[in-house]
Picture 1: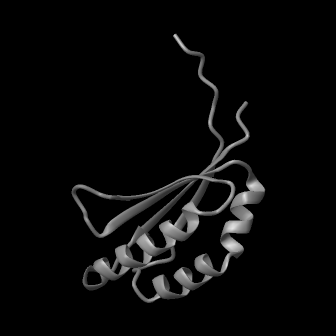
Picture 2: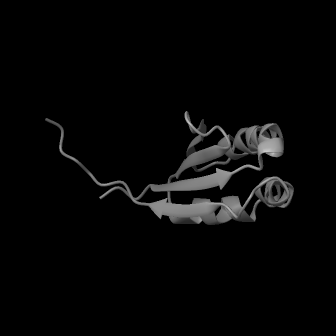
Picture 3: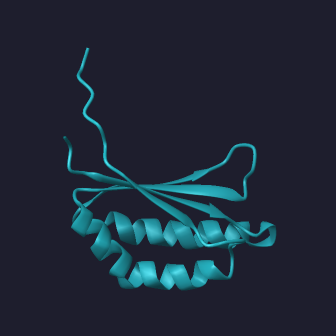
Length: 102
């Protein structure tokens, strides 16, 4: 079994704040991608509902994500995003499942 951690964060921007949310997330993505154990950090926007945004993150281990959420760039973005969102982000943690190659 892989030990990587995949995390999704579902955010719902206030319609008038969508660009502010995306700008904040872009800055967070740049800083997060430079973290030692970050493997992936993607921002995805819902095709039918552009105020719905999903961040997909992957870390080499659980501790790396714990360090990420303690980082100053994550803490600063969290404070900023609080004013721009309709509700708190929904955070989910996943463990990849090994699927044999065909």
